[in-house]
Length: 253
Ligand code: 13P
Image (cartoon, rainbow, N blue to C red; front, side):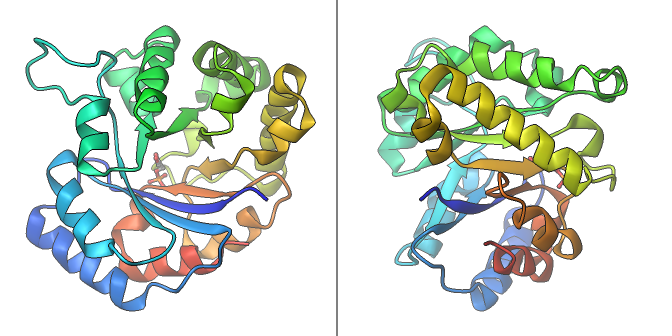
């Protein structure tokens, strides 16, 4: 059975004292998880070690980096490699968030390299995809997202792709308060699963967790997470409020 995942993406928010306050409140209230549920905290690099220490011993709670470099090591000042993250004990790495695709010009081929660097060292990629508003309005979203998945992931073997989590985040829903409707989310998640099934077969496609991201909040998480092909969420703004994010965790199927 595939995992149901509530993932927090703190992005470039919170000073250390602010992060401490949030994490204290979150861990005070955070529920125990069933064996098929996970909580992932994608935090800024300087907080990785500390957050890992704070969640240690809590079953199903994991820590993610928000990015890594596409090379193993070398003269890349200011960058962080996948082997470094793995050697710290980090378990997950968000890749290809639309903010990085846009502001850092991350291309599909670069992301395919990052996926490989992560899998080589046992880091689970949380591979983000999603269309801008102009493509949604032209009804090109299925081709766009299918193309991102093929270009970023289809060089993988069937065994390797089962180690990836996919996050569908329509760009027009990120930070806008405009969530995809239940129908829009389910339709896209089913499309992603059919793209995976065409390449890898139904069994592999059914085993991959596909998260929805874009203005997920406590008030809409239950409906979204209850959809047949939505396996949880990647949450930005609402993950910065402990009570909101705790409710989102409780909304996992
Ligand atoms: P919001 O939840 O703030 O819309 O952000 C979504 C997101 O980008 C998570 O990665």
